[in-house]
Length: 136
Image 1 (cartoon, helix red, strand yellow):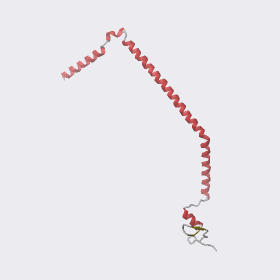
Image 2 (image 1 turned 135 degrees about the horizontal axis):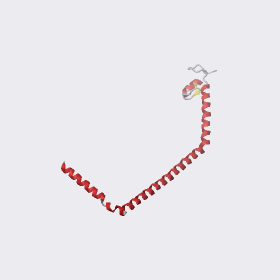
Image 3 (image 1 turned 180 degrees about the horizontal axis):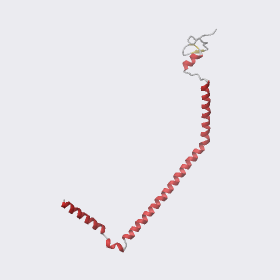
Image 4 (image 1 turned 90 degrees about the vertical axis):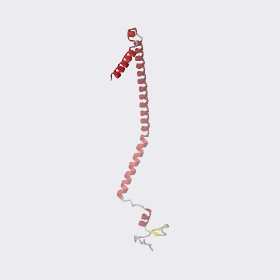
């Protein structure tokens, strides 16, 4: 004697405790929200599994390359910092030499005639501004 599913009119081969009745394969699939997989989908899933496997192999094989790239980046950063420091030192040395050369010029006897010239020029400029204001 076979029990027949009233909904699909097929053999009810399973007993559902939730529903409290015998159900067929189609009812079971529907109640669980399952989707049947056809041959085309199976092929795509096999391809996907193969791609996933190949990806994992590539990641594992190339893990050492990631470390190599990190070491490479660190070494470049280090060399750039060394160049920056040397460049900064060269600029500081040039600036110091330039300042020293200006001190030598300021202390030379040839410029003794011009000592205080900056202040004199500033005073003349202030006087001209006062005259201009008084004319307005």
